[in-house]
Image (tube, rainbow, N blue to C red; front, side):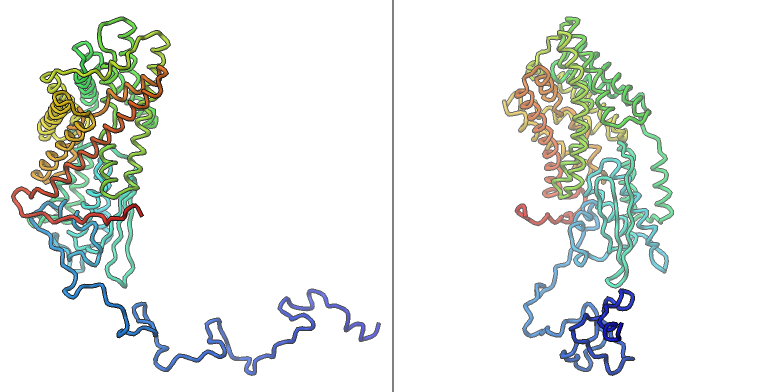
Length: 549
């Protein structure tokens, strides 16, 4: 083969590179100075280099070359400057910190250092850890997201950390601290694994936050950690059997509210006690709370059906309704709606979802027993549950007994039990006067009564410089929609689905009326009432109007 034929023969893949131009494409000339190193940031040919002096190092705050101050739009800052926010020192820390939550970082006033620190400044990691631990106890105790953030603000600012941003969701707390605009932020988080109801512990945490944020009390970091450990180790004021007896008293008092007598009181109390003990047993076995509520709802329904099958002249519906009162998650409902009304929609959605699951658990337990009773021939009258029974003296006493039992179940301090019991009696008196005497709808009557509960609870908490939950949650017990819930479930079991769903809708409306009324009463106290013994509280900024966008 000749040399010309060898030249026309295609080369193998190993003999040429993928970057070699194919035949027929003109090859580029190599640069004259091959030692010159180029990069992708080099200026291409035809682009002029920047003038001398402008190639120096720039920062993020350097205006661009095209910026002209004379033709710039007017600034949004007013001529007199941004008004300074002043916080009244004599007002409760809750009011002062609520005024800070919705303020931008640049508009927050400088913190008044109420706790002494070393010359080198506060121990930032320890302050953040203490803040998270305090927020964890408050969130686990059922406190609203806004109040938890206010407490975290109070603790961090008291120890000199002003550029803090706490964030609270249903089970997660986080806080970020940035010393300055040029320093890296420090972020810490904590997850709430277990939640329990102990308002005595909640009140102790509020007392600790009040001492930390007070100018008159010096609480070092070591002292705060020690007191926090004592709060965690403290025993509950009421033991397990006291809680079980309180559940029986709650169910018995609720049965008296809806027209039951002495036999109904005893039957409802026994059913609630049996359900509570069964729930404790299954809780010790690790059964999820959904099934605990389903199991606890079965004994009261079974006793009511048994009395009906035995042809005992009692209102079986009152027995079942009393058992429902002891299980309805009123505390979680109020907290969920409160978080939604104050703008914490993620936490509100999670709380309301939890309420829905617990309510479905109760529905499943009662529905199973009602279905068994209907199959056995029990003549349950659905409309018997909503008969208007007017016995003002007995019902007021029953409402106060129900509130007292609810306060024990919430592990409240003994000093607050009497006040919340009176608050519950006032709530039922207002509801009875409006609904029975004034012929006003139960939803409107419930909303007004719940609003007074929230108003009185907020007043008591402001006087005591404590949380409003111990004065509010137990007092709404007599207003819970137990009768409407039972009526709806029985209608579904007996095949009257439309009527049953309508009654369940009424129960939901009553529950929302309770939650909104309690929140509105508390907001009314904050808007129009002064702090007892102090000047006007700092106002809290409302959320901006978004019109749904």
